[in-house]
Length: 206
Image 1 (tube, rainbow, N blue to C red):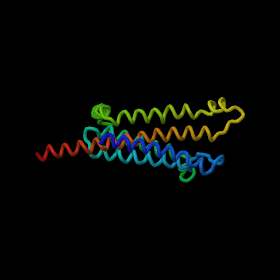
Image 2 (cartoon, rainbow, N blue to C red; image 1 turned 90 degrees about the vertical axis):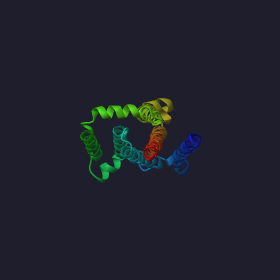
Image 3 (spheres, one colour; image 1 turned 135 degrees about the vertical axis):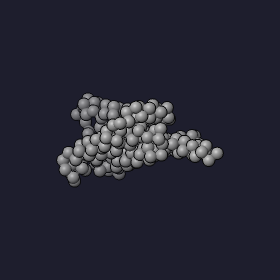
Image 4 (spheres, rainbow, N blue to C red; image 1 turned 60 degrees about the vertical axis):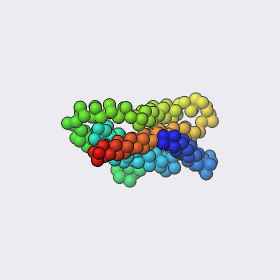
């Protein structure tokens, strides 16, 4: 089964790489890789889907509940952050900061008396296969994509031939890779939780 999942992830990531390239093939030098691009839309989809899956895991898994709540809230805040331009233009300026603050406040209120349980839950999560995917994805999103998306780097590399879209596609494409890996982490955790629930039900029935 793990081989099948691995192949699905392999072909899935290859398909995502092709999606990143679609805008370039369709628009050529007019491609912008802005907030309306397919790449950005996929980022929104993956962050929101990951958040939903993590919250589902929190509902079904008591040992991992606090960890899943934190992961669900984190990916939901990332989803809101990725929609900052839309929210600023269609809601009000600074809307995404307000929404993120509300999410953070809700998490603090929900877990304020569960510090010890949260630590134990995170420790249990670190023992699952999902942890490595989450760590890898977050490093790519928060560090690697930012470093690769520095304007100074691409200006130094291309000189007078600097083209901003090259920077954009590298930064947004790398960021999408990170979100894809976090999505894989969510799916892996869901598979782990489902297996644990089935095992627990089987033991109870016996």
